[in-house]
Amino acid sequence: MAGRRGAPRSEAARVAILDATAALFAERGYDHLSIEGIAARAGVGKQTVYRWWSGKSALIADCLLEGMLLPGTLDFPDTGDLRADLTSWLRTAQGIIESPTGEGLFRSLIAAATENEDVGRRLRESLADPRLFASRLREARESGDLSADLPIEDVSETIIGALVFRALARTPADPGYAERLVDLVLGPRTAS
Image (cartoon, rainbow, N blue to C red; front, side, top):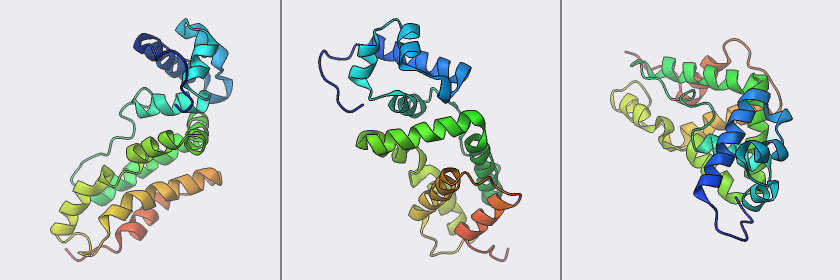
């Protein structure tokens, strides 16, 4: 949302623009999303959209960060088996990234984060926040299921970084990738 100039943002217009962006993204995907279409659906001029957002990437990032895209899809499961839950979460995330809609979403997030420091910071806080898995990792470490010296703060960044790298390289996950990544990051299983 860099470059905000002019009149203060109307909350009703902001919500209408984000709602229109989320709806059009769901209907058409990233590649067929346009600022003109968003403005028309929201009932505002395209100048209003451009006054508050640098482009569709920043809009998509805001929609995702506000929970308007993929709501609940990336929630971390809790079956009581940390490795299985982390593997399941990774498969879900990889599936989203490899889908046609997810690929456009991912590209827009990367573009928005590189164009705007605030979007990049918010994206990190949302997706690569060390707290994403931290409580579950601490519990597993305290119970002896994980190594006592596992750097919990680095686990989320490492996992998200691996997903980002594979997505940028457009490398699809092969069978067993999620399990291998979990084992690599968490270390070998400890004896029960």
